[in-house]
Image 1 (cartoon, rainbow, N blue to C red):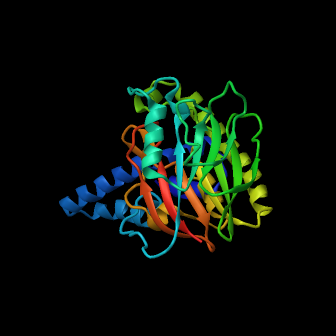
Image 2: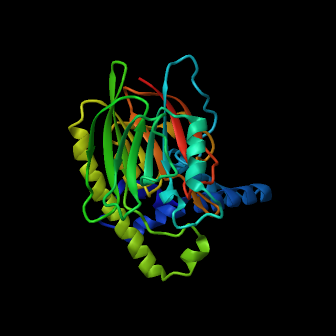
Image 3: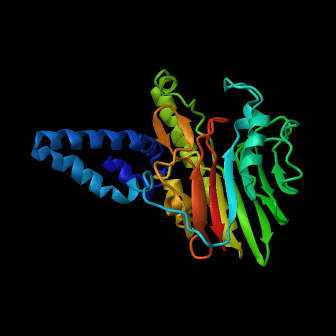
Length: 320
């Protein structure tokens, strides 16, 4: 647990294998709480050990568990959704039919003003042209289904791609005009860990190779962030970074992103543990909406329990 606390401050470029320990933090948190309750019930002084460990990690734990936030009313805002649609289930992972149509219906019902899609491709069964006349879709090639897209009800005046090298993952951006404001939205999909979202599947793999592969992905994510960081430095607009980190909210990558004067919409207005990725019983939050710390106000945030992908959509209401 203590190792997890210090990992956000050490680059996985130097310790890629050790960085994988951070993925276990939710489990370690539960174990320490169980020990705390056990020793408390026994009225033993040993309760001080898990208590101290939990107190030391309070700031990090509040990235996982957030309670007591309320929507802020009376403020005009726009809504932004981020959703990794997992290629519209083209490979039939889910035991459901018509996934593109179901995702389309979900979008129509929620009607966010702007959407950042990951693992997206142009699908004939997913058509929202009338609701979102402004869009930017990026695919590395027509044979690959893990593209990125930004859909908007507001005009898009400029777009671009960061073109991460030697990968199918990427980051794109769009400059979106709302009234007198121009917002730059970065839609990110950092390097994938290539893990099946199943604990038993992970147990069955060669652990040394698995740790090495995940560590290498963490290392590559930092290199991809550095490319994004250079792009952010050239930006003069209010900024939003949304998408799939393929890493946690207690990772070095997340720490780097927050250091770009960005605040987390979930921490500002979310509630609960904010699970966004279906990984058995482990509540992982790897999809985020991060907004300009000084210039954008978060008025509401919602996690959806909608099983149409291995990711769950998230939505924030933002005021400028």
